Image (cartoon, rainbow, N blue to C red; front, side, top):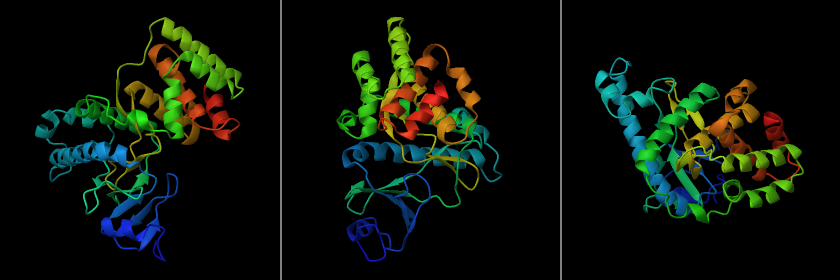
Amino acid sequence: MTSSSPVPARVLDLFAVPDDVRPLPGGQGRSVVAGDLVLSPGRDAVTQDWLSPVLARQAVALDLELAGATGATGAPGVAAAARPGGLVARAARGGAVRIAMPIPARDGSWVVDGWAASRYEPDTTACTDLDVLVATGRVLHARLAVAVTERPAGLGDRDDRWAVADRLVWGSVQALGAAVAAYGSAVADRWVAELCGDEQGGLGPGPDQLVHGDLAGNVLLDGHGTPVVIDLAPYWRPALWAEAVCVLDAVVWHGADPSALEGWRHGARRQAVLRAALFRVLSEDPGSALVADVVRALA
């Protein structure tokens, strides 16, 4: 590391940015801005080797679509609306969705010593409007379902706490029940029993696909009000589950109205939000205040 930067000099060199870095607010507080890039630590090279090219292609396609849709006047163009995805993209408030562009290092690698880079988006603000978050997720997942049709190799190799929680939530009900029992929550125990009954009844939240499992805290609004998706947390799960995680997180941690959960009390949506809640519970330590927050939201 240089004397003025928390980022190793080799990382700065390979991403061709100066060592004059500044902290980036939000997230886990570890990302920095260096030149025209955002550098983020703790990235898995195996994951980014397949994920970053997918996101880069989608980022280019969405930016081109936005440019064609707005034209010189800022109004959506007829030709753009007629293109595949054009009408879908306009579902997000502001007329489009964007993805923060992943940037490779000079040697072609996506991760250098655990650090990955994306294009810095200036003049952004955090998006907390739940309607925009949900619409953004639907646009994103519709595109990812087309772009990635098979489960990427390596997703099952992750061993971080979120990946472990994810496998428990979607594994056997017996293993899930044993894991949840350690938390001493009668409410969470009832969620597991309810899921068991739903499985026997044949209910399900839909087909698996590549989804963003942490959307609520990872959408920005650019200077034009267009949603920009950042830090995609990849999971191979139903899009409805990812939307449930988004809604639950927005209510629990981002100030959304609790009434947003009223539409998640029956059928496949109920199963999706229960799995979302158990996912959040199991990714934290027993006794964590975050666990109590999730339990209260759905109690």
